[in-house]
Amino acid sequence: MLANNIENLSKMLMQEKRMGYKNRAVFGGLQKLAPNWASEALKAAVLDEEREFVHQIKADLCRYPDIPEKERPGFLHDILVKLHKAGQTKQNGDNG
Image (cartoon, rainbow, N blue to C red):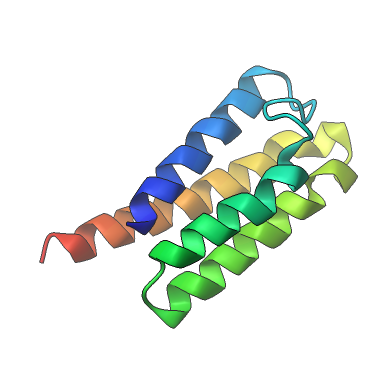
């Protein structure tokens, strides 16, 4: 279920926030996490739009180390908002 992948990534990104946006929430940085997360999320993705979403998030995570530290809070917030919206959409779809 893609919602589980979204939830797990959201937790890691919240940890990154708590650690001051230093790209140390996961070993090797968020860019190292991106391929593994995307691989697992793609296994759970059913729709083309879900697969596209996973690729977009992966690209964002890969860009993270190149984002100036002062801009990382906003950048990370934008990713979290995307994850939240996707998680809500997926959960609402599962209820029907």
